[in-house]
Image (cartoon, rainbow, N blue to C red; front, side, top):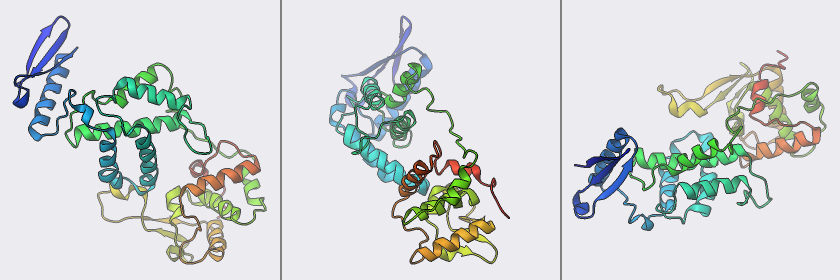
Length: 321
């Protein structure tokens, strides 16, 4: 059993168990309830063999936790997030993976994340700048890795959930201001008409048609990317989506949904079907191509601050019947 003693305004936990009988684990807390919770967690981790001692944590790498998370947890997420989560975690692994768990403490993550904001770590070969929102996605990735390690795998980490604490400190310092503000960008007057009238050529035509289809159907980016000609029902004006983002969280066994097609949506699908080969509707090999092509199209038309996801907010605004 752990021994908890009050010393001044703190509660000191002392654990003498197994190989720690003559070399006890000692840690202090401001609240007794927190001290009791930590002691219970450590003792359970010791019994299961998953406890990592701060004094020996230099032999454990952060890359090991990230690899396990990518292998066991990421595949259980929605299909639309698997690729993006894996890409971010793979990049993070190349930058921080060689750090030991003993060194990956609050100060380390605070310095790493603030470095991203100051662009000390390159986001890509083309030198794109980091946005506050994108930095926060990276922070949350590591917070999730640590949370799963503690709660699901029963691994007691030397410094707790250090990425989460680093995020709290950054928020208090105002470094993440605006990261949680929801973006609801909309097309301005005349921009929808500009997209329809655009005389696009080559591959740009596919992005033009995709933008218009986003507006007509309200489909998600991943749903549109995976469209198949064989799932289009022109007679009943439906697209029989075989799977969607929420399928993995549903309690019923039915997957996908029927997406109603406006007259304009059906016409767009007929145009794209004639332009593409095979059953796959769109020619792109990666879902991010939608964002890249849409951005280029919008830059040419002078449309600012609108993404493919934002176009879902336009759903229902321009229907012709």
